[in-house]
Image 1 (cartoon, rainbow, N blue to C red):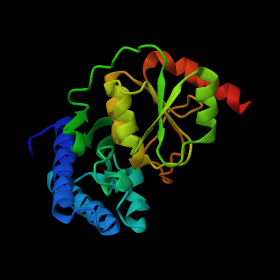
Image 2: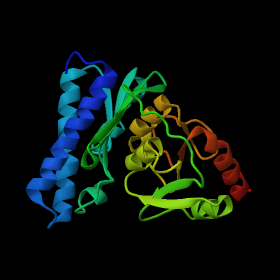
Image 3: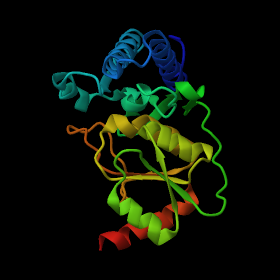
Image 4: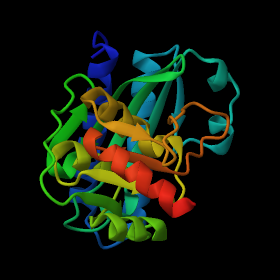
Length: 253
């Protein structure tokens, strides 16, 4: 693995952490969801941190499961290379038996841009990477918008009504963006608050595949900021992006 390029490394690390999480599910079961969530968050985080320290010792890391002090370390802001990881995206779904809409995110940011990334969907048996970006599907008929299972933004419900779109509840952000890339939906729209680690890896893969990815006002998604909050996002097939952006602008007037 030490000889892998960054694209290959992102894919291997995300897949390995995913395998670890599948083993935890099998060993612990679902009787104590909180304990399973905690074990998953910590186990995947520790695995990714150890591997990155060993294989990319000069790079900085921003992880959801890092301590607050680690996330606020100012050295990250002057680093040329920063790995942005979410060791377990969709912790709620991970701890629910039978659910497969959770993910592991591993992305690399370099000098202002995402340059490599991978989203492992362990319970679906696949990993999407920038090494071999997925081929975008063709749009067919009425388009579908992925939304949160538990807190879909009210404006997205209004947007879907105005555009005649169908809302499709999916768990983690990584699983939602993956659904755009694999043809299960045509778009993902969110405005309920997120952080950089929620989207960096899936956005890296989406951009490499040629999908549209932006803030909901059409401005670029910017990563490795002092404040890692990134409250809204739009990822879609390229041909539906103009319609969605226009619809969002109309709703916010």
